[in-house]
Length: 414
Image (cartoon, rainbow, N blue to C red):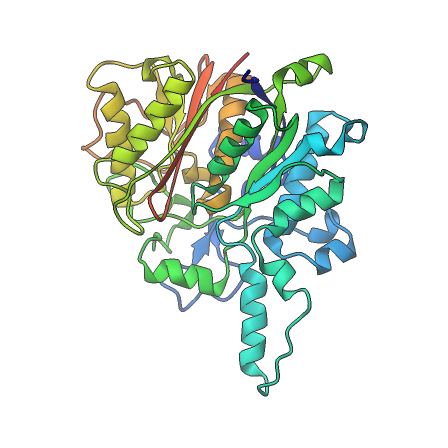
């Protein structure tokens, strides 16, 4: 017997808001979270801006001991998951702790502590003086481990890594485990803290990021003919996934049901998506098949679109593979134009956007896009400029990652 899986709690720490209400208000309003970098001196880099968290202070959320022993990506995970758990309205202490798990994602893990410790060693006198917290703060699984330790959850616990598809992978795994009856509740999502000199410099060397330094707020412009690369972001998104009957029994508020999810691989290139979007199209089709839907049933499609010349069009080609030239009701937008690209946390943040779009019947816009790429088919309507109030009952969220990873998740309103 397969169990139904619903979302009963959400939390977010993002460049456009450190809680769900602020985040959603700014997403719907189309306010960009992109600005010049403050984390380090970026004056010598090709790109000098990013989508950083605003007014973030760990001490507002965590005690001194937790701050001392965690990297930023784990701090972000703890804060977002705390929000989601509170939002779920459930007293987890009344459950068998082995029925509650954590499946979390991060693409790079503790980059901040890695750079700090290795740089300190290189500048020293040759004597190794690494912190005893170096490895625990660095390793990517520590976010899931710390969420578990903080709350006493003793069920399934591990971390997924699939680059920018990471948190969709985590959501899909959590969905599958609950569906199979191996857990009642799983905290899932992703966190990323990659705005550091080495990580930023690496992506800059790839020439993957926008260099629109004169006007950073408009740099992320998916589908625009003048797009020139993505904008790096940071933060976390968390979701509480719960077995449907369990949620109904306790009278939980349900944001939506996960009805389909799928992963595929491009098997094409280390960093580029397949130019025809073959893997992406297959992931969407498999997720639709599992949900017993077709593309014409989808009201809102939140694209992975990061504002790169090749990537945006490959996703459009993938969607067009499913729709053909027939008219469709679905509306498309790319909310990374607002939040920047949160890398391994992107899927979780965009899943939350899909859920809130269903709750409020409004589709956030793609901002900054003033001249659509002429290669985009006319039957694929992209919401530009302003959010669109409309009935939203079904949503599809895409994420794709370096290495050819494709992840699609479908949410439906109950």
